[in-house]
Image (cartoon, rainbow, N blue to C red):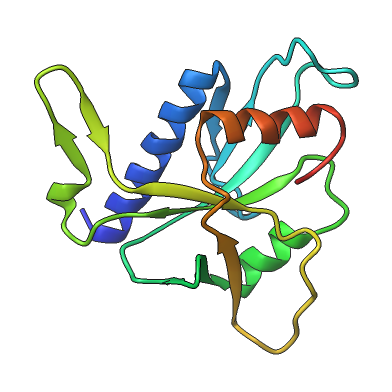
Length: 166
């Protein structure tokens, strides 16, 4: 398997694990023509508007050193940028970037009572970012404070239940 495919599959597994802990459903897109790799939805008992909200995720994984001054500087293909930025969407879309170690042997550590996944996912909403023209890639700044974990994933889905996007 190509390393790019390994990163993609590991990223899907990582987000699936977080969603499972949060009690949310995930669904993979069969064709990624709208820059959506994974949908996340579920019942939110505290929701006031939509009790079954959904968010869509564009997953990216990299072992490159892209962190500068507490921000991931991620070069996103222009098509993905435009698809995620689209302001005419009902379902909020987020960019999810998983930083992985260079060596695939370091992605998962097996222990006697558990296993651990390395490293960490981060999320960004680029809905309100500026429009760009004439570039094939757009660098998206993702603050390291926007770590994707169970609490933050539930927060993003809860926002969607209120008709909002982060």
